[in-house]
Structures are given as structure tokens and as C-alpha cells.
Amino acid sequence: RLVESGGGLVQAGDSLRLSCAASGRTFMTHTMSWFRQAPGKEREFVGGIHWSDTSTMYADSVKGRFTASRDNAKRTAYLQMSVLSPNDTGVYYCAAGRLLRVEPGSYDYWGPGTQVTVSS
Picture (cartoon, rainbow, N blue to C red):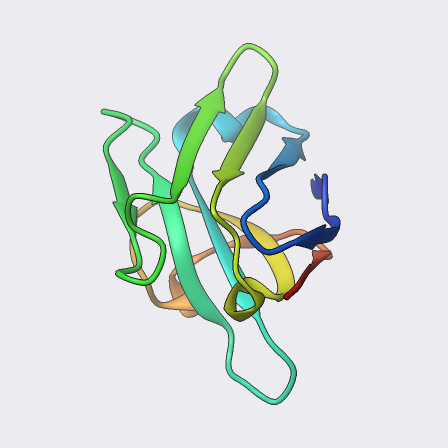
């Protein structure tokens, strides 16, 4: 139901845009968020955009560098990432849920993930 794309290998300081294509009718009424998981670490909230008022929320580590957005007509969510650093390396997942929360358990649907690797 959710499929991420846009990951890859980039250098520190570069930008990258991730996409999350959704199928089904629930996209319009679901908050879309992004999580990431680095090797040996827990999955962490990165940012998200509410389905109703398009308000956004971000982890402190990415504020000012990452931007979450959505195109309801295309049923696609995006994560624009800039000034990337090696600390941003990990598998990035998009998730859909009713609430904009940082807890992974709050989300109903998950994509398989896309790898982002930032070299120094």
C-alpha cells in the first residue's frame, strides 16, 4: 500500500527527495510520516504532515533541513532532505496513520523502506 523511492548514496551536504506512493482511498484521511532506522538503532521519527490541516512536525535533529509535504491528487508524500550528513544514514520508511505522533505504534501502514547513505 505504501512504496518509498528516491533513496541512494550521496555526499555530505547534498540534498535528496524521498517519495512515498500510496494506493487505496485512505491516503486522503491519513497523516503521512517518515521514520528512519540506522544499523543497530531503533526506528526513530523524522517528520510528518497531518492529513487535515497539513501541519507538520519534525525531530529536532532534522528541523530546518528536512521538509515533509504531500500531494493528495497524486496520493504521494515527500520528504525533502537537505544538508545531509553521515548521521542521516539509514533506511527511511514512510508510514500512514490517523494521528501525527512520534511513536511508530501509532501508524497503521508502512512501506518497505528505502536506503539513504550519506558519505563524508
